[in-house]
Length: 81
Image 1 (cartoon, rainbow, N blue to C red):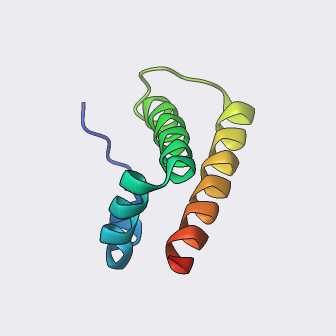
Image 2 (image 1 turned 90 degrees about the vertical axis):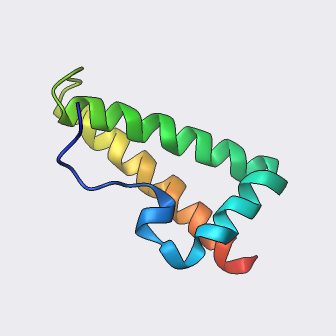
């Protein structure tokens, strides 16, 4: 099932940094770990939004905050690279 929600992929949200994100993923273990966490959380959120695995409003809000914090940290790393 394809989600009607907008993608929260880093390369979609920040296309100008896509190559930097790729390089960091390949060369920085900490960044790669953050990205793995972000993608797992994003997948949980998507599954809730697609009504495949409802998780409840409080948990959804918490996951969205976690995703945002991870994204902020990865964005700062990419800007500093």
